[in-house]
Length: 90
Image (cartoon, rainbow, N blue to C red; front, side, top):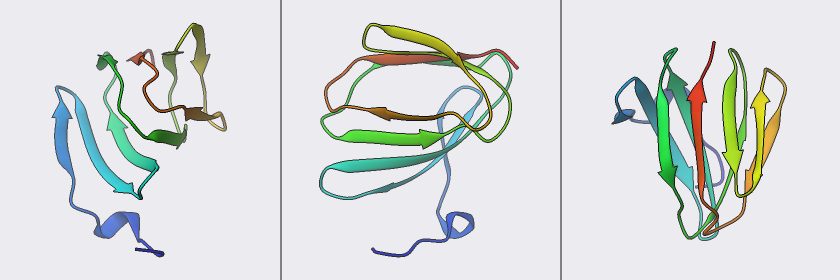
C-alpha cells in the first residue's frame, strides 16, 4: 500500500472520545486520530514503531520516560515496545 488517502480509510472508535484510522507496514504504524478534549489514551505499547504529527489542539504525551505537551506542528516517533500514553488538554 504505497499510497493512501486518509479520507478513504475506515475509521473506528479506538477508545472513548477517540476515532482512529491506521496505515501500517511491517515495522511502522501511522495513526490518523481525532481526539476530543479530555480524551485519555491509556498506557500501552505495540511491537512496531509509530509516527505522528499534531495538527490541532494540545496533547500531554508521554513516550517512555519523556513527557511534554505536544502542540500543532510537533511530530513524534514512538519506538516499538515503548510504553506511551496521553491526555488531550485542548
